[in-house]
Length: 161
Image (tube, rainbow, N blue to C red):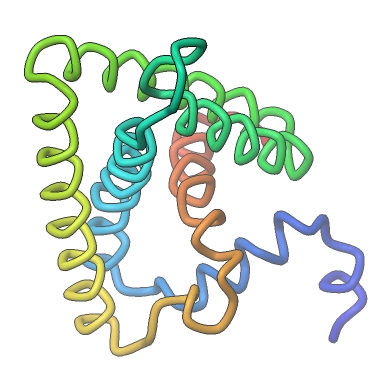
């Protein structure tokens, strides 16, 4: 391991490793679409988990999970944590909107469909790439994917993270 690798911030080490498995331009484009879709679908599926009692409404498990993920992202990078906070807020509003329009069952069906289709796209991308998904070596990369995509957007905008 080189000096720069050992002194890099943890997020940079995660991104370097994740990027090694995502060199193909087509696979990267698939990820830019599929990773946010998967993240939203997971939030929506968690939104649909029933909550006993009358103190809480739908969405509490999604809110708790988004808070836990945001805490992790914010520790890795405050600018990316701020971006993910906005994304999670948007996802929560979107879930509430969809639930209000088509009900919890409709939200569940929509989220499950998006989840399956986005994962199929991911695996097609990795087939094109010729490499296994990063999360097969370390489950942490399931959390890294969304901020890797966000960091890519930050770099295109000239923003530091």
